[in-house]
Length: 173
Image 1: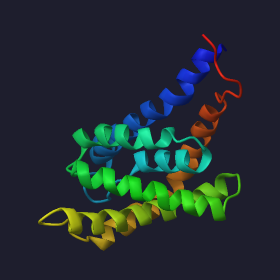
Image 2 (image 1 turned 60 degrees about the vertical axis):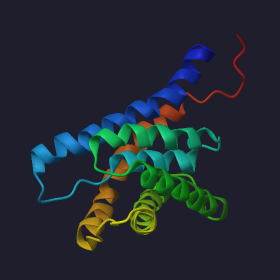
Image 3 (image 1 turned 90 degrees about the vertical axis):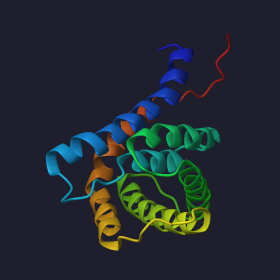
Image 4 (image 1 turned 30 degrees about the vertical axis):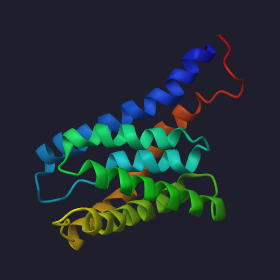
C-alpha cells in the first residue's frame, strides 16, 4: 500500500473507531441493556491504547477531536472533558515511561487503571471548574471500570491491526 494511504489509515482509522465506539456506547448498549448496566467508555479504551502504543504527539490532537466527537453523545462539559483527557494523557505517559511491556495483558490492566483514573480526574476537574460538580456515583463508575476489562481484549486486536499501517519512512509528495 502506498505511503500516503498508510499515513491516512494510521491517523484516520482510530478517529473513526472512536466515533463508532461512542455511537455503540450511547445507542446500541442502551438499546440492548437499557440503563440497568452502565456502558463502559469504549472510546476511552481506544484513546488509552493510542497513549500507550504510539509515541507521537499527534495524540494531543486526538484529545481535541475526541472531545468534539464525544460531545454530541453525552452530557459532558467540553472544558471539563478536554482538561480531564489532557491530564489523563500526561499521567498515562508518565506511567508508560516507567512501566511498559507489549501485549494484551498489559493493555488489559492499563485500560482498567486508565478508566479508573479518568473517572477520578473527571470528578475532581468537574468539582473545580463547574459551579455544580458532577455527582460521584461510585457504583456506576466502578461497574464501568470493571466492564472495561473484557472489552479491552476486544479492542486490542483491531487496534493492533491498525498499528500495522505504521510507516517507518517519511512520505514524500
